[in-house]
Length: 546
Ligand code: TEU
Image 1 (cartoon, rainbow, N blue to C red):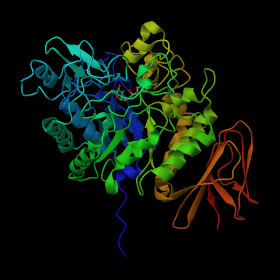
Image 2: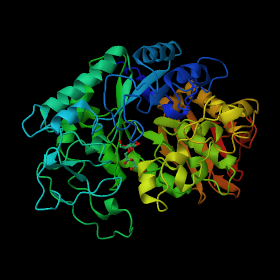
Image 3: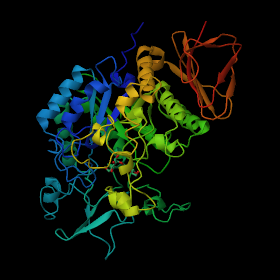
Image 4: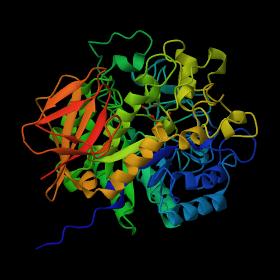
C-alpha cells in the first residue's frame, strides 16, 4: 500500500500575521522592530502558556520610504533600519526556529518603490538597461494610455517629466508596477526569493500576485454597468485587463518550483486582490496543485455575521477549489476593519461572537490566519481625519477612513502605551488598552485569549481537526453553522450559533455527542436523544460517542 506523504507543516500550522511596525518597539522610536518580535516569541510559542501558533507572516520590513508603510520596497535584500538589520533578522529566524515557529516574508513584487534603484535608472531614458523593467507608454494626446484606475484612486498612469512618458502604478504613484513580461525582471525576483530562502525563510506571502501580468496590449477595462459608488472609480470597471492574465499561471508554477527546490516544505501563499468573483482565486493553485500552496480567498472576511454567508463561502471552497487544494481562513488583516469591531455593536467587543469566530477559524479544514491582537479582542480605532496616515484614507475621507484603525499598537499590558513602546507610538494605542491587553487576558480563564489557547492546543492535538474530511450539515436552524470533521472513525461535530437565541439542532442519529470544548456548556457534558441544544452565540466542539 502506498504510504500517504506526511502532511507539510503549512497544512497543519496556525498562522499569525505580525504588522512589525505595531507589535513591539525596543528602541523607543515609537515604531515596532525585529528585536521586539524576538522579545515576544515566547508569547507566541515555546512555553506552556504561549498562544501556540506555528508560523508568523511578517508584513514588509525591507528598506522603504514608507509611502505605503513598507509595501513600497526600495531594496529587496535588506532590512529597513527602523526595524533593525539583517543580523537581527537572522537572530529572529534562529530564535523562531528554535521554538518551531516558521517565518513567512511578505514578497511585494508587483511593484517597487519609486525610490528603488531599478526605477531610478529606468526613468532616466528610453535606452538604459532598465528602460523596460517598468510599464512605460506614450499617452494618446494629453490622455493617459488607457482608462485604468489605481486601487488607491485616480488614474493608474503618472506622467514622468524626466522620461517624458507615462508609467503605470496600480497603487500609489510612488509604487510603479514592474514589467513582468520582461525576463530580466523575473530573474531579479527569483534572485530575491533565493536570497531569503538561502537564509532559511520558510515561505512568502505574495502581495497582489494576481496583478503581476497586465494585458499585453494594455486595453482599457470595460465599464461595470451596476456601478453605484460615486467616489471609488476603481470599482466602476470590470478588471479584465489590469489583472488575472493567463501568463500568470506558468509564472506562479516557476515560483513554486523555486520554493520546492529547497528542503523543509517552503511555501507560497498568495493575496488575491479582486473586486470580481472571489472564486477566481482558486485557479491559482495551478495544475496538479503546482501553483501556489495556499491562496487567500477573502469571501468570509467580507461576509456579514450571518451563518448562511459563511456557509456559502465554505461551499464555494468545497465546490470550486481544485481537488486536494488546501483552503485558508482569515477574518482580519492590516487592510480591513478588525473583525472584533465588524461583528460587535457599540464600543465593547461581543466576546461570545468573537469566540464563535475563533472556533470557526480553528476548526474548519484548512490553514487559519490570525491577525495580531485578534486573540485578545483588539478593536478598530476610529481616528480623526488629522491623524490619518494611510494614503487611501487621506484621499477618500470620509467615505473610506483608511487602514490605520486596524494597525494600532499591540496591547501588552495596562502600563503606558500598553507596553508597546517607551516612546510616542507612531499611531495612538486604542483607548481601551487598560481593559484589553495580554496581561489581563492571560490572568482571566474566561478571556478570549485563554479560549484561543485552548482551541489551538485542541487543534494541534487532534488529527481529525488537522486532516479530517469536512462536511457541512444542511438542514439546520436558520442562523447556525453545523459541520463535521471525520478521520479514521473519529467524528467531531462543530456547532456554531450565530444568533442571540437558543438553537435546537436535530441530529439524525441516536449516539450521544460528548462536548470536548464549548463556550457555554461544560466540557464532558453530552448532547443526547439526537439533539444539539446550542445556547445563544454558543460554539461547541463535540465528539460522537460510538
Ligand atoms: O493589498 C492589496 C489590496 O487590494 C488592498 O490594498 C485593498 O484593496 C486595500 O487595502 C483596500 O482595503 C496589498 C497589501 O495588503 C496592502 O497593504 C498594500 O497597500 C497593497 O497591496 C499594495 O502593495
